[in-house]
Image (tube, rainbow, N blue to C red; front, side):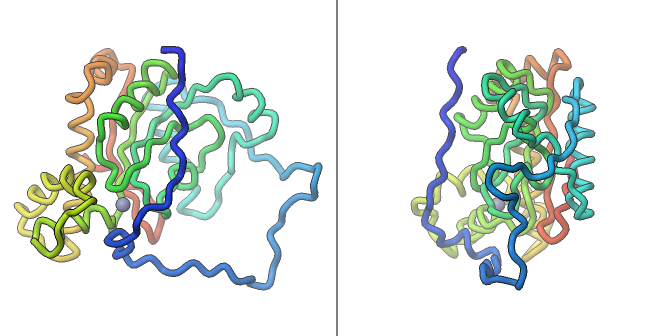
Length: 250
Ligand SMILES: [Zn+2]
């Protein structure tokens, strides 16, 4: 496989249900200080160069250490020099692949304090395992040598909330069915715990992550084989929006 998957272009989608998650309006007005952009022709102070983790265990540890820095508000902004950008232009070897939600508050590079070439990221509302996302994750492992996959959900997920509303008959799925239908098994699993309201949403988010983690090796024989030969581990995590903390789920 010589060609690389096309870069996914950002698109503005109908917001509708997915803005029901309590997003505060962005405040773009000046707060009295100007951004500290470097003058033209100069570079911003680079973060440190962090070596690529060599094992799935080290890769997961790097994710967790980066998240700890993000939570503490002390990011290193590693691997972001102009020199590295040029070095990586012809090749990439990301240590982790992320299947995350499209939610604007859950950027993996920010939440894991990662740099250029570190993460191979697939994002779709509800972090569901579509065939194309699954194939992308396999590409990351089989072609780029990625050591770990992290399925990343988050609290207060609008896609999961929409799936619950559909299950409750409050709203028809309509054109959102390709997103809400795959989450229905997680909603059913969460409902079996007896949870309701916000707790149901919390449980459904975690269940959705667990089910997606479990589904990936069943959807891809290549991913399953990589796991069996200890070349790949697949984990699930839930990011808490208010703190930025990623907790692994099992
Ligand atoms: Zn979400």
